[in-house]
Amino acid sequence: MEMKGYSYIQAVIAVTSVASLCFSSYFFLSTFDLLHSNPPHSDIIRLPYGRRDHTFISDDVPLYFPSQAGLAAMFIEETVHYSFDDAGYNEWWIGEAEGNGTVRLGPQNRLFSVSFWHQLHCLRVMHAGFKAEVVSLDDLLHAQHCLNLLRQWILCHADTALEPNDFTQRNFKYDRGNQLHVCNDWDTLYAEVSQNWHDWVRTWQLKNFNATTEDN
Image (cartoon, rainbow, N blue to C red; front, top):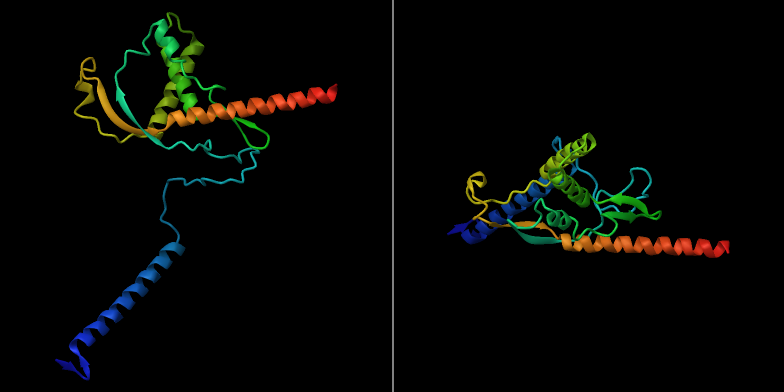
């Protein structure tokens, strides 16, 4: 079949090429408009992340501790530890990071607390309150503060892992759990925060040693 000097196949190729060119142009222009247009309104506040030029003056500080911790798997299950006796109370304090979860950052070694340890502190407060025979008003207000913070932290880190069946109907005495969750690598975070503390102690000791030497 001939079409005015062109074969049918040549005509199809020509039409296809023109269509492809038109589609590519349309896609390019649409993408250009999308990249340069104003984003749709959203109530989500998008904050800058990853800046490395903070002054550490006033509120010009990072949002997060600069950790290299990745992800880790954790099986959630029942345990005989962390009970309401003296042994369980002591277990809550095993493995506490040096410096109580505080870190020093910036040229002036500004003090910060890592939220992870604030959360653990609140859990310890709740555990101690359940164990105590007498609770003061200050302790009660502290526990109320911690309950509210734990509520907000849970919402902030909303876990979408699926649990089998209805957890309210399970007998945890026999059904021990063993549910897999994906978590932040807390072992690495412990090591990093402890290393930060040791670095700060060495800096502080060296500063005071030099000051003492100059005075003498």
